[in-house]
Length: 336
Image (cartoon, rainbow, N blue to C red; front, side, top):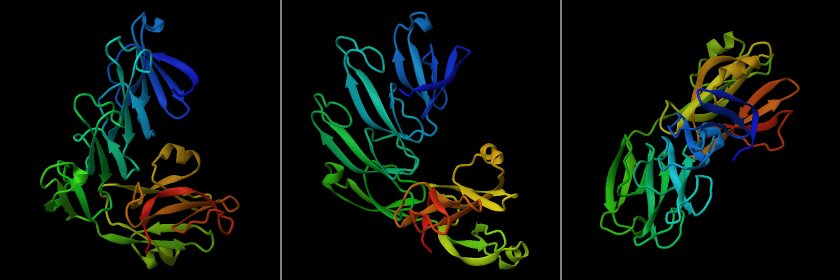
């Protein structure tokens, strides 16, 4: 478990603690806490009067967790199952029954994962391979019957896919044809060809520059006259992006620091934090994918510590360029 930091605060029987990589809380009740999952059970805890003490870990910001509950949170998949005897993270196993731990994976920012369940996948996710096994495997130990492991994939940015029967066909998609394949197990017609009838049109992401301040502004609507009136000159088409919010995308937010004359773009909206840094929220500049979909490329973020300016490019310069240092990326889009 994560090392706890800070001061424990007791409120309504719950103890909240800030962890290095996740926020946790403990309770003497197993009642579910919204946005959290149980990741540890300490039986016969003195702090709970001899009853079990439960540790809940917040889902926010986490990509992979081990849970003591079989319930899969929205937007997550059950990607692994393991059992243990004796003492463990989820309490003590009985002499005859092993304890189970469920590994769950966050689909945000992902394109492919393993699932131990056929049903209950997040919207927009489909099964691309079905494998049965005996003995031990990702999804636990097989008993008298075989265990099944599913390879699942996001439909974000896709136009045509081969998926296994039993997949939930996303809105806007349709089954174009069926065939049979061993990759989807046994049975006739177990492989579907699905097509996206609602693929979004791509639009240009234009870049304007201010010669006096060195600021760069990115917009999807080109208006040279209006931008010139504000001191900006047209430079180029920086990239192409979906023309609207679609599955697998998120907003690319724009913040502006008036004193520095600098625009900051981020897929994470945090007005409070940006305000402390002097940046005011200006709206959504575009929509970008949260994961690398076919044909996409990262939008790289650069920072110049000398002139205090941001620059965003699809070109990757690990060592930086012209005083700008590479700081990370903000989603995925397409080359112009």
